[in-house]
Length: 152
Image 1 (cartoon, rainbow, N blue to C red):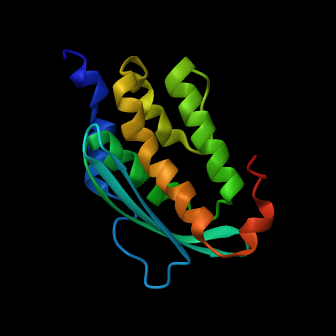
Image 2: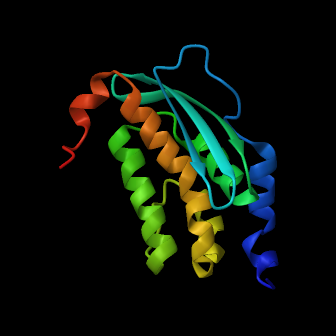
């Protein structure tokens, strides 16, 4: 694949290396682990939720640079967000990957994933940490449950 240089640009390498939020929480209120069986990515996400917002987040991510960089973006930006806010960012990221729609300005680091639009097989790698975060938030018994949209 000749597009690897643009796909694995320096920003992605730096985020994967920085691993913002890597580790474990002492007092997590929610946790989830998701795997991507096609490529071997695995993300364990923990959250502490207070008053419907993320007070702390930690992850253990094993896998490709894209997955680890996405988890690091979460480690940098998720604190203070509500479950609805994380769902909105996740949906916007998925729309950008599929059709090039603009990303939320409050998460500027997500722009580093734009070259992955051309590689549909890599979209799951990028989205896996966000889906793990949503699953962890949904497992947290908190006042955030009142803010959740009804699932049909």
